Length: 72
Image 1 (spheres, rainbow, N blue to C red):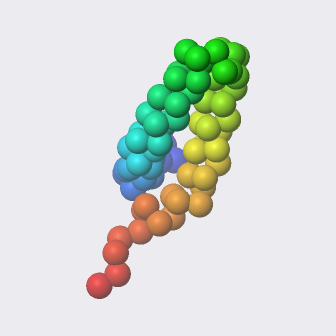
Image 2: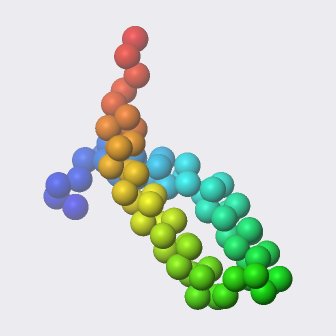
Image 3: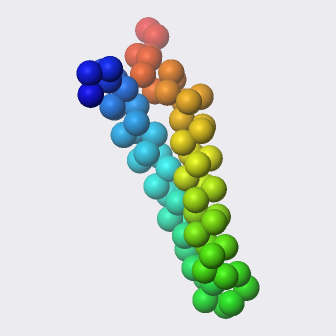
């Protein structure tokens, strides 16, 4: 972890915690649809994988905002 600063680790943690409600909601909807046999288990994993990739890509845009201190 030579290249990481405390602020970078903090930004990853904050961003990850911000994603938890959305992921829980998505999982709930996907499992409900899977239980009703509207989608396959493979589709559930595909959507979850796409969601995680989306979160990883969007972190790039949020990192700077999460590492800067508020201006007084």
